[in-house]
Length: 364
Image (tube, rainbow, N blue to C red; front, side, top):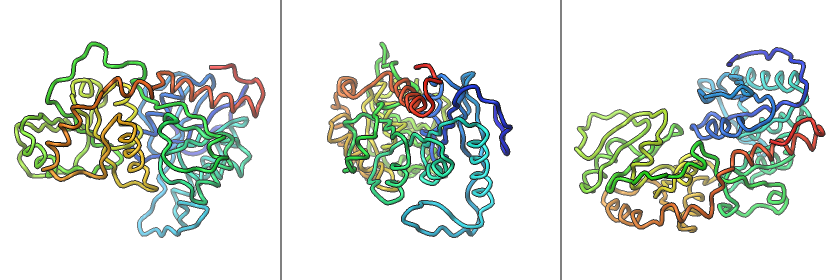
């Protein structure tokens, strides 16, 4: 159930878990749902862009207002990433979060992700499990959030660590592996269609345009391109080997039929292709802290996917797709996969709850 505003004061019998979900892209919400269903307690997903579900009986949602305003000025501080003045939505959302932490006590907050929300939890004396991300995150704000958290949870394999972090950050980090709604599913007996390329344009933004896709399809007539996700509008007519599918509620059938998947080097796309054993061209979109560029480089270094920095020119795609065809596929991903990643993440969260509140929660 959704509500927006003041949280009614409950009478908790045992610790609850709040789960702050960042609004950028769909990956944070997908991951939150996958983990929350394995938590043996009441869970509240909190954010301004929450997944539609399905929600298990222990999960509810608390919708926050947006945190932007026309003409706002965002100052830069070493210890804060985002703290503009005089933004009504920001003031309201922090107030709603504060009310939840007061009224839901005893509680723990999972933060995926926000330095400011993690620090708010610490100021309230609420323990926090902070979700780590790829990228060069050794700035003061990130290190402060990491230090304030009880545990750090990395939703990727330890082999995917690709930046130099202080030893104390590494020692308090638990790696659960890639979390995906398709964990443990594999490809089954579904054979990919030779020459089929699925291009995924995520909700977090994409460097692809209809124009660039038309140019790529024209340069690669032997391939059939199917594009899932939002794209800027265009008046260009499409070649016969290019199909725009729009937003898909569940891309699984398309992921299974594709010989090659092209998508951003973000956690959600990588996790889903990995668990399905697909051949991936990981496009590094421009993101803060070089997040996707470093992830794409590490995937390439481990030889499980091709990593490229931005969308290559159309004339380079025939050779790029030919290289992708020769990726090992399922056998390459297997050593990195944990089919119990969501369950393990839930276990890490519940272990942290027990460390603060005793044996109030049974193991997952």
